[in-house]
Length: 134
Image 1 (cartoon, rainbow, N blue to C red):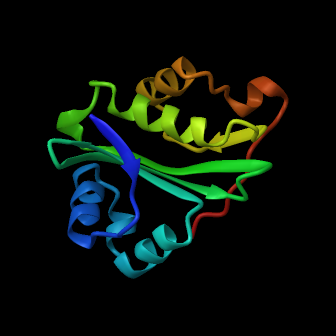
Image 2 (image 1 turned 90 degrees about the vertical axis):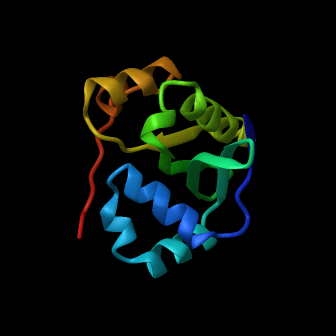
């Protein structure tokens, strides 16, 4: 597996990945998704033999805060270390950033995954989170 910068937005490739994981809110407005990619702090992709396995996208200032906006791996490629490799590669890009944050589904699978990589739930560190979803 190779992790590399995802520099050029390939609409077919990205829409296929987001659709495969059921993130239709993104695929319903591909123009906004493309702009999101173009304005991201960093986007990395995992490939194997030229085939896209997954992507990770971060936003933020890159100095005080990084927010992992998206991390997606094709369902049939999950549980093979791809998500872990993507997340570790993103974290390693920002060694001096104090806050690396993300929001995820509250399922045993996702909670266990992020905990295994050192993430803590906000409530466990004396914080809470808020969001407006439109």
